[in-house]
Amino acid sequence: MEYVKTAIEGVWVIQPKRFGDARGYFCETFKLEEFRSHVGEVNFVQDNESFSSRGVLRGLHFQRGEWSQAKLVRVSQGRVLDVAVDLRGGSPTFGQHVAVELSAELGNQFFIPRGFAHGFVVLSDVAQFQYKVDNVYAPHSEVTLAFDDPALAIDWRIPAAEMLLSDKDRHGLPLSEIIPF
Image (cartoon, rainbow, N blue to C red; front, side, top):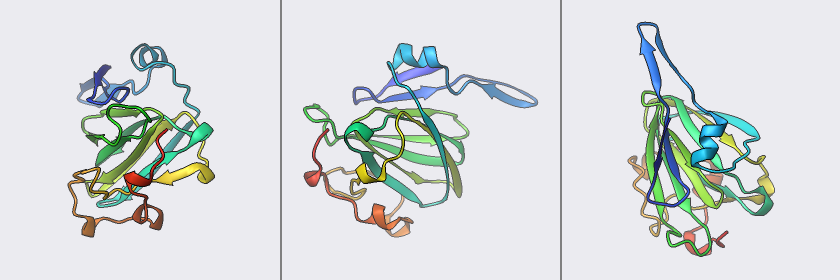
């Protein structure tokens, strides 16, 4: 696998190597020792999956305190624009984001460490999204950052009027009201 650092410290794009022939392809999507040698110690405890249609935006979510989560995400069907926003106190990149297009075709992955808000929007007709997390879901500690906050200046590639949002995602807090990690 190829591990590519992004403009924000701790956030990685990971490109597994695919071995293909007339039957299709094979690839390793996670290899613990290789992952740790590049990213560091992360103990994933749960795998999650979502299935969404074009325009669905999920995020920008994060969990506070002892419930904070690191995530390793990928798409097994379709394409998404995946976004991580730095919320780490004292970070020189606080409030900045990294956006990566993930697709089943490319097989690429995105690692988001603790201290970041995370979200994605579906660019294809449908998308199957999979992610590993290093902590369980704790709804009482979850916070939603406003996906459309002008301070973030995220180009989601889909007009907000065409997005499908949950109430939680529609009413996220602006960056100015977020207490850094």
